[in-house]
Length: 250
Image (cartoon, rainbow, N blue to C red; front, side, top):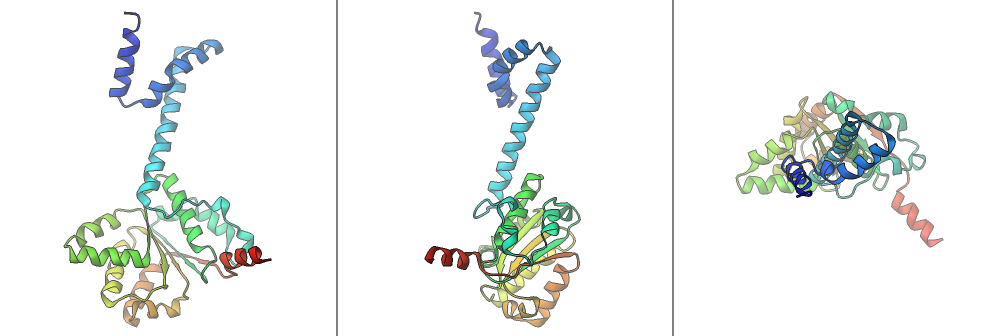
């Protein structure tokens, strides 16, 4: 009979979905008794532990939903290797206030200079701030949009993309887009104009984007929307992969 209150407590905490309370209450009770803490301080500590753990799980869920190819933070980025990149601006962007203002970020530079790493770092920071993020390469996103069109679920996909606080479109310019693909991507960008933020990374300067979209008129309309409220990250330098390969050979 002496175990009945404990069994009931475990049951109630499970029903209330308080797993940290369930796992920590006994240990913390002993700790607070040793330290001479009263019941209010004990409950406060339990609540703080539950909230911390709940926030950690929410961040994990947001990171998983973002579909990052890998999890990278700006802490691990070698800013010294890319001196053209404005570090103070990049770290300011990691505070994510620009996402609240529905602004955009465009990272431009040759292949291998860390544009994807920076976009992943900013995406991770946004997840940690409680924002909804979605990562795609430009080619994969266009493929998904075309597939959704064929399967008559384009509106549903567009609604999902529009609901994200931050949409990351990586590697724009690596593959020229078909006319249909370019128009579908324009529609996504247009729907987000002043409603949601975008990060785009590209190996091409703006004056060569026509090669990707195949139309000066369409390219002009896309750039007009993207650059109205934008932060440009210039990332010119030697490829990280090329440098590592050279080191390995020496």
